[in-house]
Image 1 (cartoon, each protein chain N blue to C red):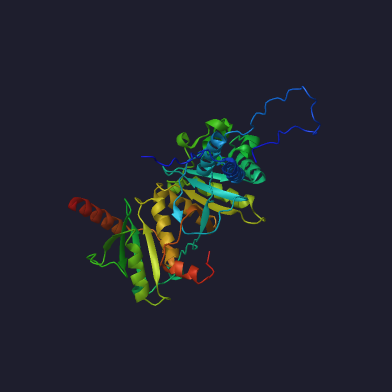
Image 2: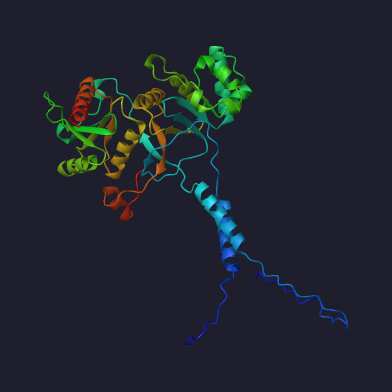
Length: 181
Length: 216
């Protein structure tokens, strides 16, 4: 392949006495070229972006001004997930107790188990997940928890503003957690 | 002790075939590669299992950078012209409409948007720009922007409303953006993310295995 036919064109014979030029090998060492080729390949592999960004859809509910227009959810089917700072997750089922005894702390690894557990215990129609991001949590946390909804095929969920009590509770629990460490 | 001499074989291999393969791959990668356009605003998007490819035409994108600053970007020049004119008419901002049309994104308070578009393109970089003020609920300027976008697209097909947020952006900015969307009746939007594999064994994974169509 890398050789060329050097046996002289035409085929006419040279006369006697004419010296034949020494045949030089046209074989080229291709190793450096291969090296270069692979170098460029690696470059393009690393710079190329094969994965295009994807988009996740989010539908917002229209703000209901009157309390009677708002969607009602069964207390037994509700789980509220609160997002704190430093990837902390808190949750409670149903209504928050006065003594906050059902306020539990979790993290992004364990929340899937919690949600699945809740899902298995409740009627599918009644199950509603309420997501309340606190002002300390990041955009990534919100996307992660929304993603968790689609991973666990939870159809009903809502992004709701956090209440002052809940924000305070998060702060207290976070302080306790850091104090314990 | 006579040892049988092994005939010495040449160690040089014919590299031609390997060279061919290398360059074939090289041409493939050169042709498929699409260089990322240098982005004025650096945003690292979070991952999600969403499988739909983000639209890159006819979009209105709200960008939230890592400090929670908000920028607006859109691709349709006619709509931008409309917005520039509307701003000039209602608020007397003296915006240079041509420069406004050419700007890729907007990220300044309305009062200084004229000087923002007057800046040369290469100085308009995310880090030192003010962004559109959103944090103050009483004066959420994104509301005005979204209202103008709404007016610009009146009677046309609604644009693809995208939101591109940085991992580290704090929730209040996100909330402010959502509020601006809601108040202008933009109730459907898409968030730009990086694709991620669905964790094995989860319900969504099972649904995908059985070939069920995913609800987007």
